[in-house]
Image: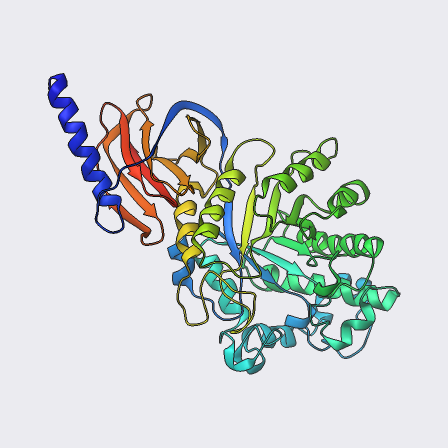
Length: 480
């Protein structure tokens, strides 16, 4: 093909792609040009675990599969699975009695609450009965196991409603009887899930936002450190005694965004956890993640996994296009190598907590998927699973991008144009050995993570027009 024909062909191809990407079916003229060059140079790995926090309005395997998430966070504890003291004798059994014979715990009661919960819902602790998802903890954990989803479980003595009432006397634990009850509950939770059953719930968080009194923790920081120590002792005993070949993880301190507690926790009780887990609802998660990593340096946890146990929003916004695009940008930041890197994360939340609550999820009370659901899904498709991250060099800071390669050699280029003008994008992948045809997804106000074209590379380059306020995902297959 001579130069003139090549030029004509590229013009036709560019126009065809631009028209295909326009939500109205009309061509538009990009006002800005951006180039991105992809190199066959590995810079790191993407976030290994991308998932969501649960919500009490639903639990549906189809949603989990559609999103492509590989981890799910649940809020366990006494208000959920021990609403009354399980044996009715406060302070009993003792830790020594449980170690001598775990059957002193009334397992028939644990089996009942986990299999046939009060009112038919495992979420009976959390809201209006008529609104709650109908199903048991056993169903949830069986489903997660069957679908190879990694559960991360919060264990707490009290919840945001300061329930259950009987446990207020151990919030915080002070006496020997208090500690017996806490140790027993933690032991029983881990034992029921993994010894009496085999649900592979091997990640445990110790309470939820203990630095936020509204979340139900009644003690101070020193009390929390002791709560972590005793919980770690119970969990460690379960695994070393009954599951010696199995690895488990304890997450702490589970604090609110901007909190100083992680620094103190790393300094004071580093031996009782192996995973740093914080919350971060900042519009740009980078600043606080960098701060936490600064605290981690020079400690035994300098290289430990860092998780965001909650991020996104708890005040609404999942139907906002601007918020949705920013959500993708934060997922890119979390997968970039360096101080912003996040090992695992749970967006808050997949489903809402109450039909009329501010705690809205990616999916509403009637099962409708909010706009951010599709943004989250597209980014997850590109980033999930600790994929190889390749060096990308954009010519403009207007376009945030990341390139990953999966275990089969497929290459994914994810980019966000959150500017108010369309951009002409040229992506050079000529240094990679890739098949010429690629798949292009768009996320925008009118295109909700949909395939908009199956174009071909032109001399190793993909060229297309991005609409204003949009994100795109290119998938290219290996040529080897």
